[in-house]
Length: 162
Image (cartoon, rainbow, N blue to C red):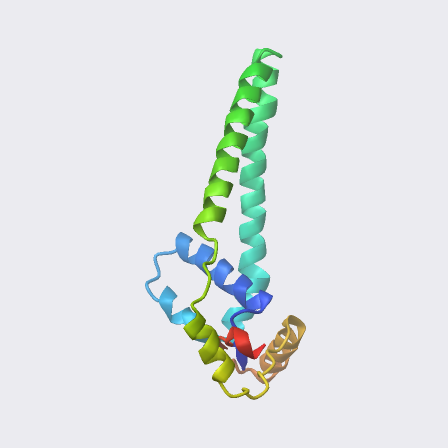
């Protein structure tokens, strides 16, 4: 099975696999950049990723409660000034980071030579269609029933061919 790297479920797989690799000391993480098997692909998306998101939400919720509710409970309402100044500093820092990231990643104009070369390229054949998420799940269920685990290859389509 061939999957396009630009489809949402493949990007979700790489994101989830990256998070799982951060928590393990497995040295074979780079092997999943080009191909994997269907069982691992579905397992990462449908099992590991929901657990990771649940644990992150639990941790962030506990941190928010620890920063907002507990100080009011322990120290009274004078904590509003401290919390307000921290929130103002955090939002100003966040706005500065977003602005700098926008201007740093702004695409530059392509040279005219590349535009001419693109115009002179022959019309490419129809791009192959990557299967959708539910097609992948149904393929996994069929493969699991046959007790096999097919290989999943990742490819990238050129932007001009879409």
